[in-house]
Length: 320
Image (cartoon, rainbow, N blue to C red; front, side, top):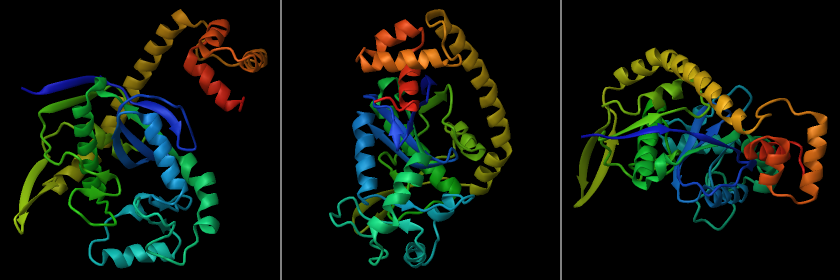
């Protein structure tokens, strides 16, 4: 019998330049420019994990993509097939990609040793790269084993659908991360209540998370057994995405409107001014209360707004 995890909700934590701290555990994704998922991971404490990601990127210990206006980040992450390293080095020499290992203490582009991180990448990371990476997480009702399973399914589906590559070219490895659970099965069914803000093709992939096109093959090399996960019948898979992307987006849009209205109704019973326009007087009161170091809960009660609204407004107004 299949195990069903229902009403899984994705929560938005902001972007990597400015995000809400949280101790939520679960599966999380990085979405670039509200379109493409560029990383999938799991964590027992997302706040600490995000700080680790932030430090790794700012110190040049993670892949960084220089995406031009109108360019698809996946065009840089594609698996080039043969001559993989030659093509990756071309990207590095063209100042389109910075690559370094997390374990490498030196701040260097291993594909272009002449590249200078301080002058060529630091400003770009702060002003362009980090602000465009949005963070979405779901705790899957606190079940760690399901988080890892969801992470693996997402990595396999997205990697296969968009033919994404990696630096090391290893089995179960791509730019999206390392697949922790390659022995995938469809025994667990995921039912999402909403989706991260992504493009229609990715929504179609998320909507197909429970379909039976995940297959395991195994290969043995010099006595060591390695697991290789593939999605067979790629033509069918791509056709499914093409046909269902519009259908899934329409379904998500309708459900989103319904959820928004229900959320609005429920919260306005508790917070009278929930998601109404902020007035200048409210902003002035908010600043004064923050200066007096009042708790968020106290400010929420005084202004009749939810704690999350208060936190978002404080960030927007840049109140220290």
